Image (cartoon, rainbow, N blue to C red):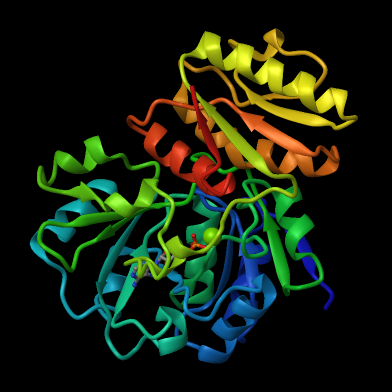
Length: 348
Ligand code: AMP
Ligand code: MG
């Protein structure tokens, strides 16, 4: 397939109109959002949605999130909106929050992977909303990566994964949040966070103090585990080399990582290190990448997937990563990092 790559330019509305038409005609388009880049199709067209699963190599039982450009568009898609879900919409939309609600029959089973519920989100990214408006359809879109890989947060990594597999890729700015949306199941009382993201538990608790994070999120799934968000059971966010997290006091972490590096070097192996601005100069004999400053977890989140992917070009044998406090957006950072490491964590 010949993929058309277009750089979105607010001055040139015809480009987005063209991409909207591709969606309306049953094609698939990758586009920027504030969370990560998405791969979109008309959410109401089952043939178009099937193309997303094929292009990504995504398991059929992993449902998609439906994106809208305007709050009113939700009314045809869901049976009812509980009071607290309404407050969440008013407070956090447009933005990086997905709400799970009971779906109507308008949404085909392929989109929801056979579930009676659907995840809905109104993105804040202007290009994303312009595309949904131009398509005049709700857009089903998972992250725009090959299944299992770290999600793309810029045009280059999106092209790496999807060039030749999709009709069109729209390039925009680097994703602001850098991690996928927070998912809240609004069909239960109390509501439950199925995936942590840029909208943190602390922020959600201001709306509902009983809201909690599904306890299965931060631990290795046990055999026969049936997660509430089907995506939770798959290995995710994985670069080519294995990732190992070193978790402990920062000074001890630096010493431990340097020791492990020496071991690898002695065996003629190449090591990558995920560090921070505060620690990057404390390592040697390895390819060291900083996620940003430890004083700015938003910056760490924004750079995480880009840094994980950057090691693919370096042919490293292992990637050693520092860890972060599971607080605020740190919960989402550690959730992605643990999954990328397949829960290989060395506690000090
Ligand atoms: P992605 O956008 O690629 O990160 O994938 C969407 C995520 O949303 C997956 O982890 C899904 O399992 C989850 N999801 C989508 N719809 C639902 C739903 N109806 N119930 C629970 N989780 C969902
Ligand atoms: Mg994904």
